[in-house]
Image (cartoon, rainbow over all chains, first blue to last red; front, side, top):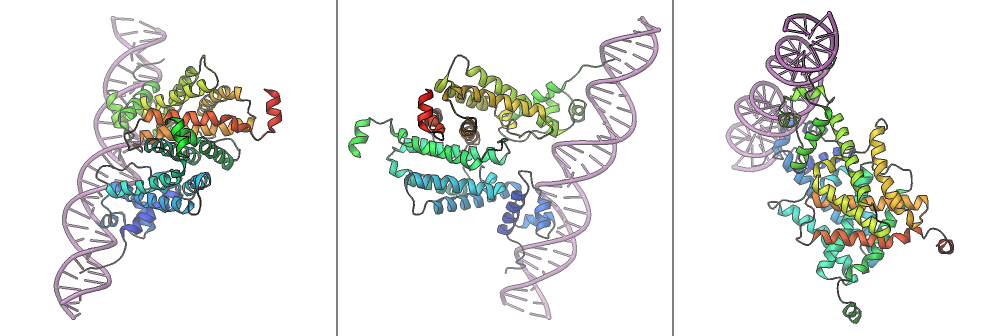
Length: 200
Length: 200
DNA sequence: TTGCAAAACTAATGGGATTAGTTTATAGTA
DNA sequence: TACTATAAACTAATCCCATTAGTTTTGCAA
């Protein structure tokens, strides 16, 4: 009973993401997305319900891509090396797909389980890589928050043009990450040191 | 020769900032700003040239407020204590004035010297507070970038609802800041250690 | 072939930013 | 006190964009 394959939700989302990447943070209109797909704006509504759903789908698409890249970056690595690799992969993703990256920042609502799950997937990669540091559950959460803050903060300022001075950004980021991972054992100091030592 | 005092550019900017703060990251229309000021939307054009200028003025207003707060937080403090106080003041500002804070992130263009200056003012506070760490000029820039990334990244994720788990955010932020300031001496390792030691 | 349902189209609606042109109110002056 | 110049406000109109309504087209399946 199906007819006219034509477009698909996925094609619309991908086109929107590409336009966003190319538009340097500016908004992208439905008309522009439609034009790129060789179609009129109202036709998009056959595949998406509206801007809100489009943004949700973009976030989902971006988070899955990000999660995949972070997981891939940590393959065959452990400890500090894995964390540094993940940090670099995070920044590379944001630089390669700036519009899609910004779309991933949309926090998932209660009625968006797929989005929540995709976000969890990203967090899970971090959790695994943090395991060797033998942090408690709460300490791990603090550490994940720190890692996310560093990575997001740096790339957000970088993409926004917030770093005006012409000094090597790669090194700034690397130093920041290294400072964090070197301080990571400090995240465990909440426990009595004796126990931590005894377990090691 | 002046007539009808009425509104002022400043009043428009302040009204816009208050509405932004209350609107949880949503956009605010000129109609809403006008309504709060008891006026019709086109009347705003007697005081601002349009949205673009409004956003520039918001950024300027916010950056000056932020710079003032950071400077104030560091009065009578030095070293780690000053950095921690500045970090807390940064986050407090973002939480108290979320809409205005987001407006400050607009990077200044070449034709916006006032905005550049206000941004420099913020950076200058950080530069002064980093002085005791005896970093080179370049190392200081890396350190400032790190500090800004941490502060912005954390509050950005916090404001965006990106931290879903109900675990004390204050502690997460404090730990992150402490980890950074503890690692700050490491920013000087580019120089031969002997010289750094001899100077101390 | 032919029918039907999906998908595309045109036309229309509504909201927001902005502009044009008009009216009103006040500060300074006669 | 009355006048006038001018800033500031208003209404009406325009343009762009998202979205909806209603119509036409197209391709698979019977």
